[in-house]
Amino acid sequence: MSERASLHIKGRVLVGPEDVREQMWVVDGRLTYERPPVAPGAIEPTTLNGWVLPGLVDAHCHVGLDAHGPVDDSTSEKQALTDREAGALLLRDAGSPSDTRWIDHREDLPRIIRAGRHIARTRRYIRNYAHEIEPGDLAAYVRREARRGDGWVKIVGDWIDREEGDLTACWPRWAIEEAIEAAHQEGARVTAHCFAEDSLRDLVEAGIDCVEHATGLTEETVPLFAERGVAIVPTLVNIATFPALADGGEGKFPRWSAHMRQLHARRYETVRAAWDAGIPVFTGTDAGGSLAHGLVGQEVAELVRAGIPARDALAAATWTARDWLGRPGLTEGAPADFVVYDTDPRADVRVLDTPRHVVLRGRVVR
Image 1 (cartoon, one colour):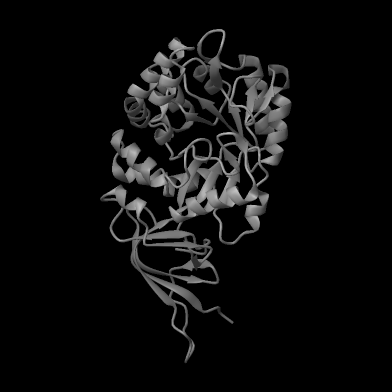
Image 2: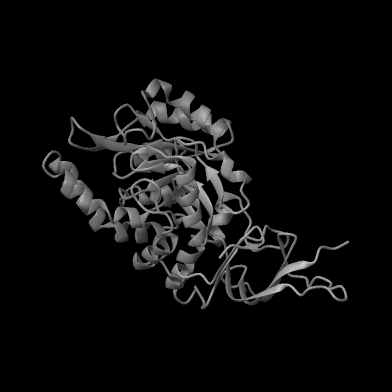
């Protein structure tokens, strides 16, 4: 016997940027575009009206982490709920020391794709965040985190070298090649934290799948990324903090501070050059370190400020992002994870900051 529809959505359902449908239904927690049969005397489904998008994607955040390291489950729950309230229903957790598998059993919390714990060079990253190791152990740790994660591994590609007084690459080429090969053997993709220029060529030529931040892209490396199809997640809401970080380090590391300011000053130009070259660009906020959760709408707006057309910036948080991560959008039979807005988000992405309804696993949670 067919389950009755619990929701009827009317208005404009954005299955894709140009694939717009007038209505859909939620039956037993899943989407359908075929009108379900209504038994005599049955309760009518709840109707929601508006512009509908797939649940937004924050492709770089950290649940279970704050500025000081791992957090308790209560704090992790608040982080996930904050993302949910903003309409971010699919999170790629780009490194966390906390075990958040319990979230998978909560029907009211976003879905998470984990990259395990950060893997960094000894004393070359934020304290309490990462496995801190030397190059000879990199492949083994990458293999371990590939088995713990959900198809991704995160390494720290560059960080400040206190002796140099500036950002430098963390790993020799041979270690990167071994590590990426190990991850791919385990069926996992590899991403890397990279602010500066020096590490990018080695990472891409070694077969990396994605680079986080990517502020160090140049005229020489942009074509290389495009040729290899390496994605970037610019995290522009995080890059906005570079001037304050530079001010804080000015006295001790003036070269690093000047470098950070330069990377910040050309951030929009860098992202637009990447997009113009055909590099896949996706939204990520870097929430969970020192940055608040729930900023995915602001990140989409930042991509637009960088010069990416609104529909493409929107796709970076919805249709193409879900395809990239291997998760369905608003397709027939897909889990009913979507967000409803008052106006067309393709016309003005700022509406993403004020969702009318959030539906997760077929339940209206906002």
